[in-house]
Amino acid sequence: MSLAPQQALASPVENTVVGPGDSVLVLPEAGQVRVGAGLHADGGHLRTTRPGILRRTKAGKLWVQGRQIRYIPAAGDAVVGTVVERHSDAYNVDLGGPGAGFGPLQEGLVLTCSSALVRQLLASPPPPVVAALGAALAFELAVGQNGRVWVGNADSSTVVLVANALANSERLSPGQAHLMVKKLLASVQA
Picture 1: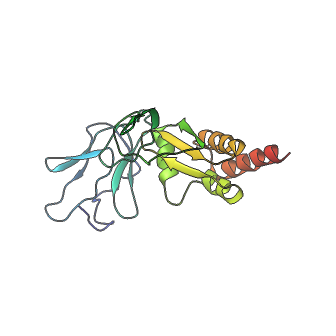
Picture 2: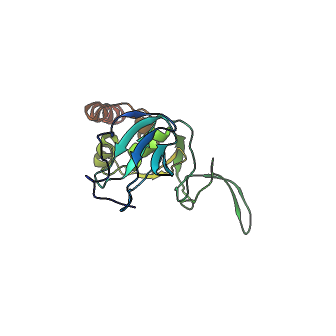
């Protein structure tokens, strides 16, 4: 469902605090509305399913940005899991929730982070901490919407540095993120 970005909202409700069950939009008779996480259609209204801040993308998609810690699964989510048993014809994988996998991820570290940090890491363009780390180091990231992030590199010190930087970056401004990465790189090179 999609209307033109300017048509999607009849009133300036984006960037406002909402609670579960709040009606944020009367659905139009014709056309479509792009609905994201934290919203659902209820009769002729678009209602929130969780507390947070109502946001709208440039393409007009509405969603609720919350500070939830726990992962709430949704169809199509990519998740990171840990293989706990390996059999001749199958694997037993701890996903921490349902979803598809990335395949075997080796030589790395899995860390658990908040859903808010996951959204930042999956955003385009990438957050400042990832851009700063990527300019100085070679590493791989696999970000699961279940709050698990895999950091991969053959060098364990690089993996630990990247994992620590990511874990500590959630509430940093872009300037603070660049400064943190600069200090971390200087401490490793010293």
